[in-house]
Image (spheres, helix red, strand yellow):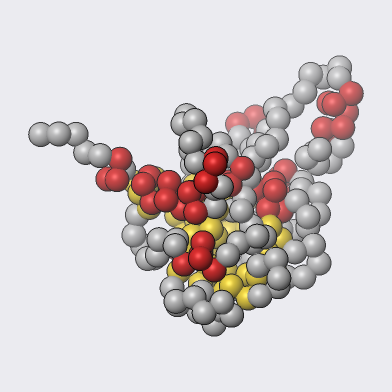
Length: 207
């Protein structure tokens, strides 16, 4: 018997709304917010978030296209967290430079169904320029700008690492020894005697 192909491999992602996790105080809970394109045309609303329970990182926004202004079919699709960004002032999620054709080509998401690796590759290709499709395979699929949470939250305010995490039971989820979990794009703590370390220690704000 031939080995199962990649299409049968499921990544373990959970819907925030179906879990015991919650967004920490001080970070915006974007569920229910409108999602717009660069022209401020409504694409839909944030229905939920999919996150990796092992790393406590949000990977996808679940976009509900009901009541959109682009004549898209009603349904739910997944938007990689790094493709979107928070509006600087309004409670709105922006997806810059996205087209109705791109959104219509995304595979539909059904709540409760597993997400295969092939589906995630299909989603990535929708948001990747044709001349960049031949990217080199990476050990970590999420080591990519499409999943950069720092980019998503960046315009809103400086990100405090501890406040950027999902929590469970009201407690911050920290690594052993009290060190905070690194957000996407953040380097490990610099050497103690460096100028970068002094900056790092000021309220643990990401540079």
